[in-house]
Image 1 (cartoon, rainbow, N blue to C red):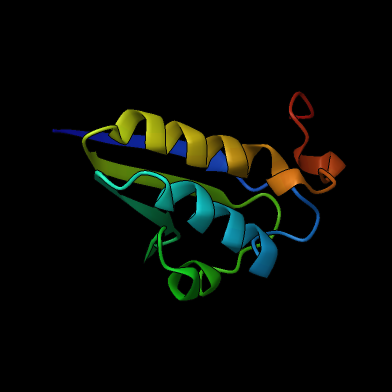
Image 2 (image 1 turned 60 degrees about the horizontal axis):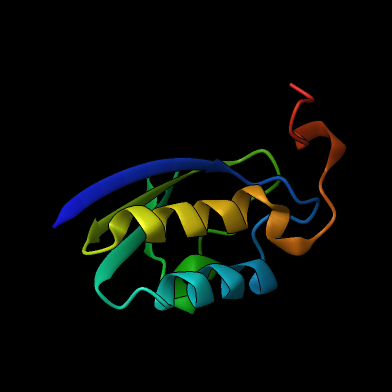
Length: 101
């Protein structure tokens, strides 16, 4: 059993809203053997709960900490981070595009 912490950045123009929240939940839920938690500014959410993730609604530029624990935690955390860093398949805000910093 392992614990993994990964950071990601919300890069899409609209931030973390309903559709991106659903993508996070869908990705995390594929990993049945581990728990995945998102942390944003002192608030935490079970990444497998759509209601909890939606409550973290955050704008572009927000840093997200992904905490995963259990079998396959490294893969689960990496996949959730990739979804977030990739802008949830939406248009990337130029201010937060990779290499713009």
